[in-house]
Amino acid sequence: MKRLILFFLRIGRQFAWIAIFLMVVVIMIQVFFRYVLNNALPWPDEVARFLMLWMTGLIAPSAYRWGGFVSIDMLERFLPKIISTLLTLFLLIISLFVLIIGLELGLKHINAGWIFNSASIKIPFNLIGGKAEPIKLAWMYMSLPVGIVFLISVNIELILRNFLSNFTKLELPEDLDKQKLETQ
Image 1 (cartoon, rainbow, N blue to C red):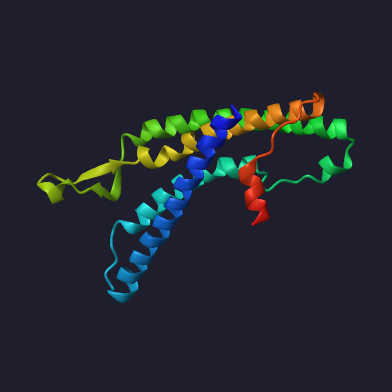
Image 2 (spheres, rainbow, N blue to C red):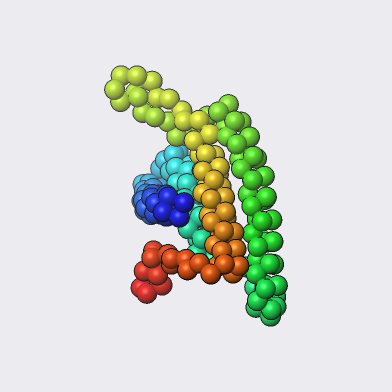
């Protein structure tokens, strides 16, 4: 399970880097057209938002796995180890329920997104003799459930890792990607 999660998280991080690079390029194009040519384009703002949502959905699971989310852990540090472990497990289980509810809401949001078209993003079929087709907003909204599915898988892994490392004598392997990041 861990290898599969790591594989998808690595792919997600690579796509997130590509998305943030493209987002910067699109924003720079808009700045040039708006302030240098005094003729703002209609599509860069929405494309940048599309890329930002996907970047967030793809990078959040890695941040969650590596403890990169903001958390208040003062109480956890002052409690005895067993109580701290039980509190952490309890909070991870609550997080799992919240993520499942978020997934349900995200899927409903996608269904509504198939009804509406993007205001400015269109597939340029007119370049090959067809008609430009607007993109459905569901493609933008899909970043939410995709990210949440990865967050759920990471959450389950964190529950298992926390339980196994504290209540069994198993030696769990470390995350090499996190170690590389910390040494840089």
